[in-house]
Every structure is written in C-alpha cells, then in structure tokens.
Length: 99
Image (cartoon, rainbow, N blue to C red; front, side, top):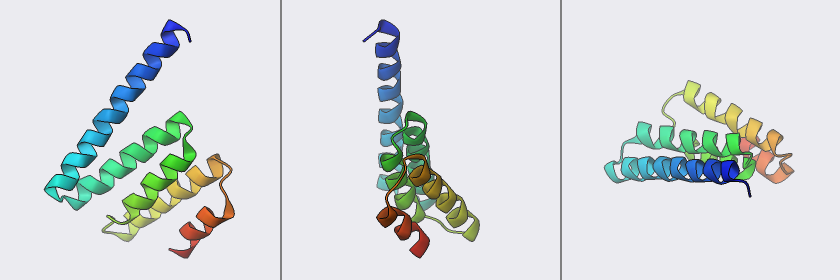
C-alpha cells in the first residue's frame, strides 16, 4: 500500500467515524430530521466509496425517518441508484419497489 493510499484510507475512516458519531448523536436526541439526514450522509459516503450494499442499507434506514413525499422520493431514487450501481440483486430491488 502506498503512503498516499494509506492517507486516503485514514481520511476516509475519520470521515466515516464522524458521520457515524453525528448519526448516533441525532438518535440520542431523537431528532427525526437529523436521523434521516445522518443516514443519507452515511449512505452517500458508502456510495462514493463503491460500497453499494452498505449505501443501500443506509438509504433504506433513512426512509423510516422521511416526513414528506419529496423526501421519500429522494431516498427511493438514491436507493435504486445504489442497487443499480452495485449490480444489485432482485430481492433488494423488489423491497424498494414494494414501498
């Protein structure tokens, strides 16, 4: 592993820990919008890293905290994109379709 690659992984790990800490704080305070946003941010993080299954799981969790149809649509689109990006299986995709 090159030094640059190691630094990138360390920076990525720090960002992931920060996002998970933010989400944990939102859950502790029971703030729905913050929990939705935290799940979306964590899903976006995984999506950018190519971890499409993890991204899809975060987007599915974010759906539980949606308050408006627009939020549900946005989460659904990101969920579908993560499943397509990772050449997702039909079971996960049918879960999105059913909702």
